[in-house]
Length: 83
Image (cartoon, rainbow, N blue to C red; front, side, top):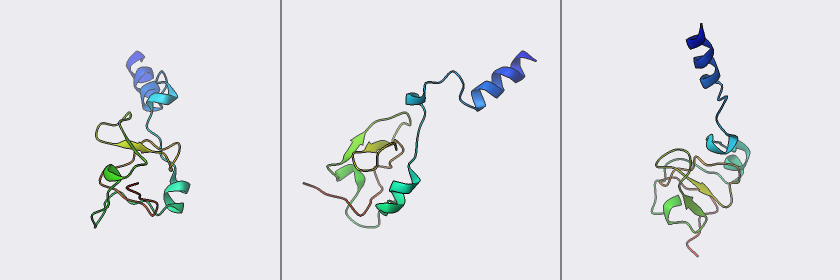
């Protein structure tokens, strides 16, 4: 019984601070035309708005797409900038 309660709590994220959970912002992703993979030379990892690091290894955050820490370094959006 204790195991079932523990696994239920873990599955809904109880005991994990909100700041440690990965988040996505689908509205801003759509507004900026973000996609996880770029077909060109522009990538999030080379954009000045990309911030590496976050709760998921290999992903980062973006200064433009707020409240989203699942930005793929190989992704791109319509606001990509190198300056």
